[in-house]
Amino acid sequence: MKKNIHDEEERIFGAYQARLQQKGLSDEVSADGLHYLGRFEYSGSCTWGRQCGDEEAKWDAVCAKKRGLVVLTKDLNDEEAWDIREEHGRKNGNAVPEPSTAPFYRNLRAWVYGLVSMNEQGVMPTWPDARVAQAHFEEAAWVRVNLKKVPGGSTLATKVLQDYIGEFKDLLSEQLALYAGASIYVDCANREGVALLRELYADVRAFGTDADPWIYYSEKGRFIVVNTYHPSYVGLGQAHYDNMREAVADFFKAHPHFGK
Image (cartoon, rainbow, N blue to C red; front, side, top):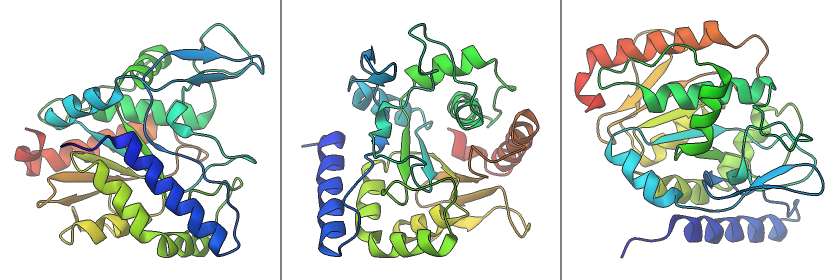
């Protein structure tokens, strides 16, 4: 019998929290994983939230089309833990749904839209209008996983991130295995996501000869990894999206079977 993804996510978060407590570390865990697609809620604190919906069925469907997407980020930039599966990309403080103008969401929703919407030849659509990308961000099944599940600040030292990954590698690998149907990963964590995926797929390799290549891929797993900056990084936008679009198209020209 197929396991329920959210049930398995909760089991993993419980084990993560228990290990944090055992080591005398923060016991705050920011839940993540398969993006909720249920009913939106606007609370008395003037913030948007979202309930669980039919995302597991939609995830299976998008994976069958080879467009299952997993975004790998470092940690939650917030003082308190919250469930980023509720991520909505909307402006808080406004009961009328409006796309957030924060760089993080402007970039992330464009990447989600572009990568999930690319055609069989690996051609992503051009840089989207904010409302078009926002609608897709809200309606598509996709996954976001933080490699460090304890909330942090605006910066995270590479050594600290690596220490957390090393300490919880087994649980992170278990979680990634839940999304094994994915065909596209986005590594926003200085290639730490690539290193972790190699724990599951030893054949992950770079496409091209650049010292810091845009694309990694696995023939065994039949997926690509887009190596990019964190979506909140200063200076990203349409030009960066266009470069990503070109790199992805170049890969699929060389490996057309990956898109089908």
